[in-house]
View 1 (spheres, rainbow, N blue to C red):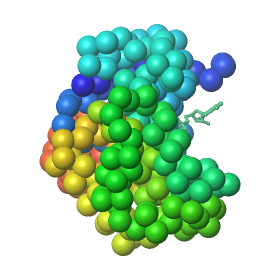
View 2: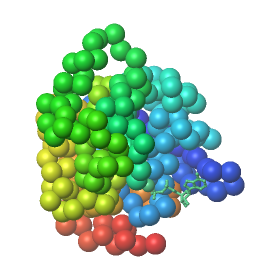
View 3: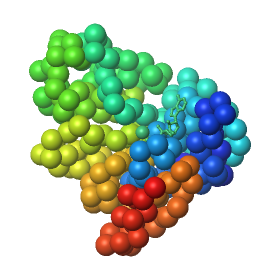
View 4: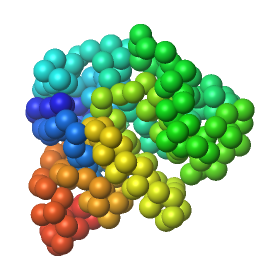
Length: 234
Ligand SMILES: Nc1ncnc2c1ncn2[C@@H]1O[C@H](COP(=O)(O)OP(=O)(O)O)[C@@H](O)[C@H]1O
Ligand SMILES: [Mg+2]
């Protein structure tokens, strides 16, 4: 569904991605692991066009999207749930969800899209009038998920969804990702939590200093001592 080939990207003089290639087949969960500053978020930002690649190719469903703007790419069915700030604090939960719904102009009725989110995350319905900053980190992550899913993307990009979550919520997150996968969603999951990532993903890539240093089916990565050394090294 998505293929990156030899992607190079920099922030001004700072080279961040040095020839990243990876493949996200339809219906699979692919994880991109790596230490802090290895270029994981930059990879996701490059996919949605928020960071411009200086070289390489990004194909989404057989269309070249490298060089396109986010406003062209997102409506094609790619949704990014960003790292960190998660949702817009001064806006209500409802307003946050609406932002997600507007991100992809679709013909079908959006009322059903909201219902689908409440079905998946029933508690979100209770929070609709609350401001983003009145929610806990875990609640914000659910709303961020809802905002990312409400446009019914074909490809979901998740940037460290587990960061800041209590262990019990990390477990729930794993279940949410598995349910999405069972429903046929294609996911590229960026994580620092190796255990979570390897337990839900089919295939993993390790990014180190802007290069893919290791790749393989997660079954082969689990129990590979090199993985931990690679992952923690540097
Ligand atoms: N907006 C930016 N301007 C300049 N440098 C940046 C910017 N964003 C990230 N970087 C640098 O690019 C490198 C990769 O960052 P990032 O992709 O966020 O890594 P990761 O998500 O793997 O932690 C880091 O060295 C970081 O400091
Ligand atoms: Mg990051």
